[in-house]
Length: 224
Figure: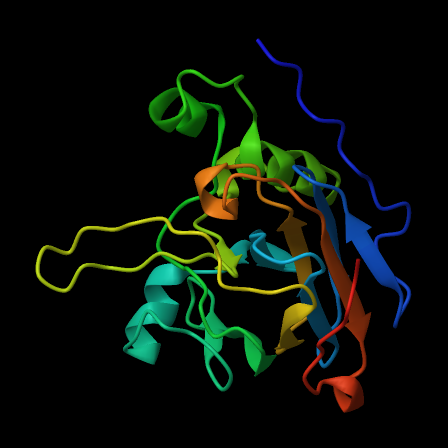
């Protein structure tokens, strides 16, 4: 069995405002995001997915919900102006800027089981599920509390005639980003996705920045 990729641990649970933090390829991170703060998730090299989770900071029973969000948005194409809701219908994150416009909120984080199912000829990897579980453990989150993630930059078209899902390479280019503003105090889990099909066959880091609401405009950064 392949050994898990070492987790990149954030020393402080609150990320310094304005600092660009890198999540290395096939790993994850977790941190606090205060109400009113913004989180910008950046694809520094292009064609890389980032799985995002959110829990209410003072009550981990309230968690990001794909079902509530898609129900209230009446669309699976979530972008600027849409709100990501909790399982209790509480607004958690609002998308305030988005240079890509194609993300996924249908598919669950990849895991050892995902690799057994879709990639039986590749080395097993704990995937985003395992990385999220490890990153969120210090905050008291257990693996069974991990729901469907909001998959930033993931490209999952739905065939209109059959309903069949496909996983295609992201359309994000180097420097593309999506920015959220927190509508409550949150604990965030975030990864650089580990599944080959989700990332066009290669694995790259993800960057993120925590900043004030006044800096919530579109971020497009040029990275090597």
